[in-house]
Length: 336
Image (cartoon, rainbow, N blue to C red; front, side, top):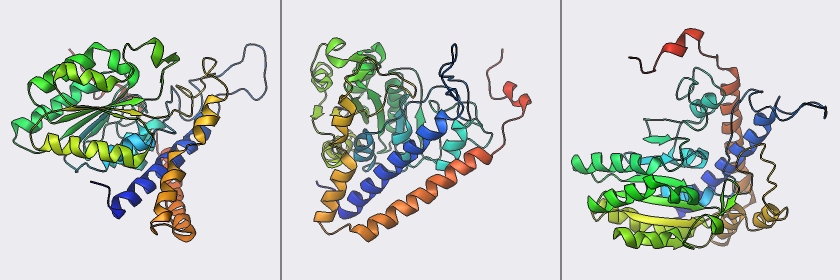
């Protein structure tokens, strides 16, 4: 079934929010990390600035998040990967607290201890982690819990095409099929596993073909389009809610930025990202909305102004929040 007008508008607004949020992070993240001028021995300092550590951004991959999450209920679980912000925003993770977490502040989702790759918001049943492929078994756990409780809740595991070569991926698909778990495995095929092209790491052209080995449907979405993803995910989510088991979906999407911020991208053709941006999925969806009379210049400006204010407030919250006390280093950790 095609998305309703309300769903189309939600997907458009959410994709804009994801893109604007991450574009703001591009600027904030670089603060203090680059020397004021090129000097011998000075280079990109990953530990400096208000947001230290690695940063993986998802500009271009927004359709995967909104196309799937548009079908989800509050009780459904989402497990993201190390590039998690688009999934988090689409699932409704609290923006202020998520931003504070990246700044390492005590008001963050994990009191500043997790950073951007370890975002946990139990209020909306969202989690993510930095270990490649580790989210698939976790999603199976959430799906098993739902099944044991007799609920029609579903779980989603999002990960990149490189993670589909990890053992945890295959183990998770096997158990999910064997136990008919209400789970979707969603692969983002952005063509690159860090700096390795898919053609040099994966024995099949589409990871959706691997579903047959585990007796589950496999769907390949060949366009980086929110509506195409929505259509593919709709039946998979409905199937899971009916108790008919898992589905594997792979979406051909585009990564506009490097694997991480500061990535020199020497492995990538220089014209690749600019060429990909010519097919940006956000204006494409906006054009569809305009053609259906759901969007005009005035409403679009209003949408963008509201989102900009929300993002500005989130970054201000992150900057102005206090750091944890040193004594908190020994709290919320395992001890023998």
